[in-house]
Amino acid sequence: QVEPPEPGELLALAVEIAAEAGDMLLAKRPARPEVLATKSSPTDVVTALDRACEELIRSRIVQARPYDAILGEEGGATSGDGRVRWVVDPIDGTVNFLYGLPDWAVSIAVEIDGEVVAGAVNNVPRGELFSASRGGGAWLKGERQSCTTGVPLDRALVATGFGYDAARRAVQAEVVARVLPRVRDIRRGGSCAIDLCSVAAGRVDAYYERGTNRWDHAAAGLIATEAGARLGGMHGRPAGPDMVVCATPGLFEELHDLLAPLDPERG
Ligand code: IPD
Ligand code: CA
Ligand code: CA
Ligand code: CA
Image (cartoon, rainbow, N blue to C red; front, side):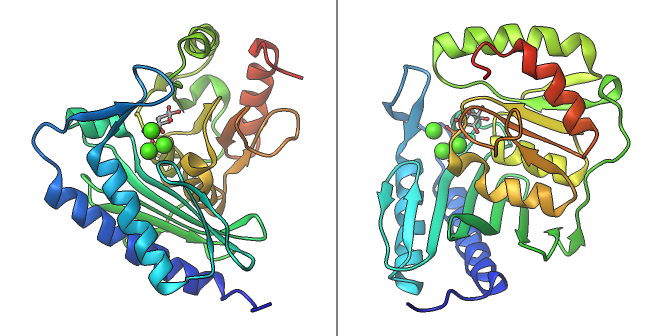
């Protein structure tokens, strides 16, 4: 079996592809993008450019590394022949993209043996491409990123998001109603990847969300941890579909402990 390349090499390719995909989206985004189809619910939309962007990203990965596996939101999973897997969200923040709000991102992560070693998140409208490789720190425009430290929960600015399923949303609304009085304020930015990059940059103190997929948080999760944050799920589990919590150590535990009894699917 061929040894996978160094994380830095994989990161360079992820950054290159995320930049190219972002340029394509900027060039081709119509003034009013149209909903092409809905997926899990009427609010779960996809546009033609979500699909075109993922196709571009997949073709670039296959050109450069034909034996790697790929998992993408729109195109599903292809198996590879080795230890490397790419995890792609072509547009994270599709609803923002649809409405012309300025926070949507191309997110590309690279895993070796299931562990994320490189991540690029390109917030296209803001011209901000965040990147990180395992052990190499988190970066934006040549500046190393670091999350806030020493912020207690009652002074924390906390980002969160809501899924597309109505029943889940009802529960998420109940949870956020209990969190809001305990923190400085809540932000709902509309992109999980950008929320996690905001933790990395110290623009918010923490993030939590139930029901995200691996392509939402794989790249930005590494960016946040390389910026000093802790990333995890509930009760010591890794970040996953049941919960992603991200904050500097200390605040992470405070937020986790606030969420634990509120969450009906705990256990
Ligand atoms: C969504 C965004 C949103 C989050 C949802 C995700 P999409 O991804 O990240 O912020 O709250 O859970 O599904 O559909 O825009 O790629
Ligand atoms: Ca997403
Ligand atoms: Ca998406
Ligand atoms: Ca989507």
